[in-house]
Image (cartoon, rainbow, N blue to C red; front, side):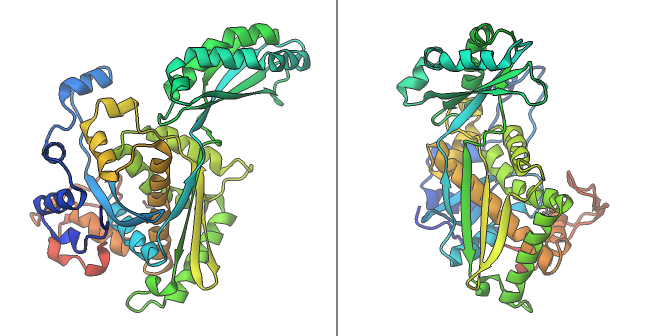
Length: 417
Ligand code: MEV
């Protein structure tokens, strides 16, 4: 696509937005049909996906605009129930664009299987025997996933730890390159294939065998620079806004209660893209929060500094997402999201998701450091209550009481991306 910047997109009707998007991205008639279908997830597919299905549950599907990630313009599909998340991320992406866009890189797609062995009489000797069998065990892991090895992935490394809390427990980690899959099924297959053998070698009995969601070998890093002029708005000096954002970052670095909310703002953007692309957002959430406290203290995933006058931010977090397998097989909307992004590989997808997270964080901190969150948030939130036809129930996840709904024209320009 030429540009992810589509000015005044929000002013268009939904139909006009679809047309603009289809033209900008070159969407096929089939893609258009998925966008328009009321049943992007037909009931018979839902019935195969989960047990006891009695219906489907829809959420808004929007697009984050203005993003440049690694010098490529990208329109980012976002599925989220909370008003203002998409507008705020798009707004922040426009500021980051002024500084050259997001720069991101992702680790190889390595996930880790954990095999627990319990009741080990001599942990040091058990550990030595498992380590001595490393090559044989890795070969067994490859044999369990022959197609992954053909695609250049597979088990790479094996580590043995004696649990410091429980000296008769050994924990064996097998690190597996999952290529473009999220990899949970493959990793669990390896864990189960190896567990009996590992337990025999260790001289104990087999315990749990499952992936860890703290996939800290599969991290993504993204940075952004924003010139102060891009942070300024009516009555707000850009340098003062920058300093306010840096102070907000320091607050999160100092205080875990604030860090939790800071990270929630990041996950607003992250989860919206993870869900849109059919990935496991609970896994990404678990990894994010475990990673946030690996130092023993809960920390912000993203921090901001004044670098030579510019606001400079960086984010690092695990990102277990895939572009093949899982929900993608079943969900036409998730497949469309991937085509909108123009990605086919998991690493590029991870960089885009992390960029949406950093954008969401920037937008939240900018609002908090200036007007406060309620002004913009609630204007968009009220919009979600629909046309002016009296009080409506509050939107999901909102503490706002029922209130008369404003019209579209009552929104200020500044509330918009
Ligand atoms: C609300 O969904 C997210 C924020 O609370 C994030 C933050 O405080 O940084 C606004």
